Length: 149
Image (cartoon, rainbow, N blue to C red):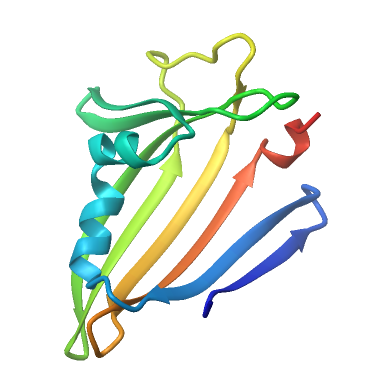
């Protein structure tokens, strides 16, 4: 379906970093970005969202996201910040979203839920030159794979 997924093994942590390249033929890049950034809309279409909200702590917008997992796995949660920027690179409009986990005392770990403690994501979206978009995404989830039962 035109999506390529790569993973790189990190010998030190025993975990993987993933890179995804793909696109959506009939979805303009601005719409992709708007959907990606809209937490309330995500709660409508993503059946795995248990809890998802953004709050401001010490002047910084922080996202809390709990993901439902089927038995025998325990739910995972993330506490992170993210930023979206629209850029002009040699006449190409590219949207870049960066996200990274943070630790804030107002979002302590919950019993029975596995906290993904080191989450990093970078996402770039631009036009495919037609009516759709092409995307590049890289992410690393420390504390995720190790916690699987």
